[in-house]
Image (cartoon, rainbow, N blue to C red; front, top):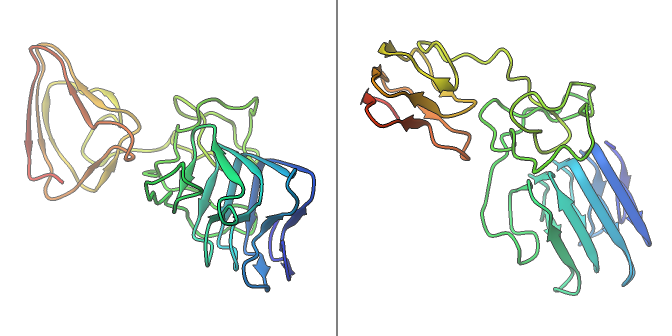
Length: 238
């Protein structure tokens, strides 16, 4: 749902029940002050969002006086605000796996950048290091993302409308992007976004020379697990 313009509710006006799944809502413009891409009215309105990406809307992301449920949803970089519950009359219910850029109601306090790529005309891709990867508590019955890519591609489904392709992810200088790292000396050739923690097993000795590059755990998991009897030497890494 893109490139629409309206005074209120540039993408949707909801006076009853709105269910959105596996969809992108972006680049819509609400011209009235205090409106949003999704604008609900009425004390009994309900909005349910599952694996939705809401980004780069002008005027706001979601505005509701009543109940909004959010699951595996990304809301980020909407002008004015991302979520507004209209003076605490309404409320936002976190069902898990959400990535927000600001507090949506009183239930979220952490500011998290989902690392969205540029809008393709259909969706916002997510970067390999995005905290949205493998974040969904379940796949909500989805076997594909909005673009038709298989879900999941990692250990769990990604949040938002897009499923990142991590099958070709490599870390220059390391033989794996997650799991068991064999004994040896490795030198990073670029920042490394790990798909899972690296494991140094019992009896293994590993040296990693970072050369100033970073080991990245998606802001969700550790980068290393050193088992009893394992040894790691980490030098010059971020």
